[in-house]
Image 1 (spheres, rainbow, N blue to C red):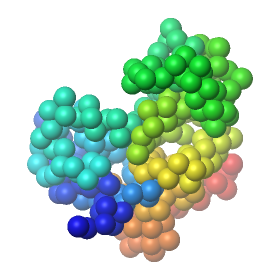
Image 2 (image 1 turned 60 degrees about the horizontal axis):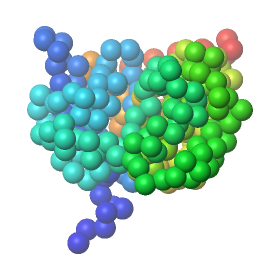
Image 3 (image 1 turned 30 degrees about the vertical axis):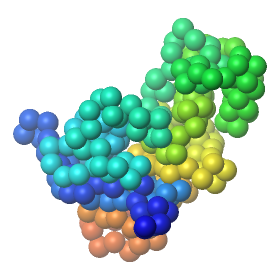
Length: 255
């Protein structure tokens, strides 16, 4: 039997996805090993978020194979994907919190859904998760009372409540101030180490990618034009990759 730790947890094999005449992904291949963090980089509209939606089964690939948790989920039904989503959860860009529930109730929601826990056990787990992501004082607030960055932190806590093996983050530092972006990056990195999580982070934030990524996928015009470590990316001969790196250096200098 092959060692599961040596098998990719997630894999795209020649995956293509179009919307009408727009080929968003064109035979894209990459893999994510267990407990590895892979960042998907690229400009807006290059299929970064579409990749996550394919992994979650919200969209279906036109061709190629999508492997999640070691299973080929390309042709899975919605019912079959429900079992996969217990292992793999997603932190949406907007947080996707329930507006009418408090922070604590939002985090408790997946625990109540799965059943088998007393109110006391749920309260204890919620408290621990909120403390882990640094928002325990906000337990009784509503999402409307929170900043964008704080909503993301709560969304991460709620994702972790489902005890996933893998977390997908969609642009976690978009529309937050630089300090909050740094805190969110630190949090994602810490959770990976503490919980041994497999992660994919979709971002255009080069500093976040440098901090978190074991490997990076760079998407451009539907293709994965680079897949490797950050150090290898710095040596890439792809013009668009170098432009991305130079632009980020300019941003750092002006901060």
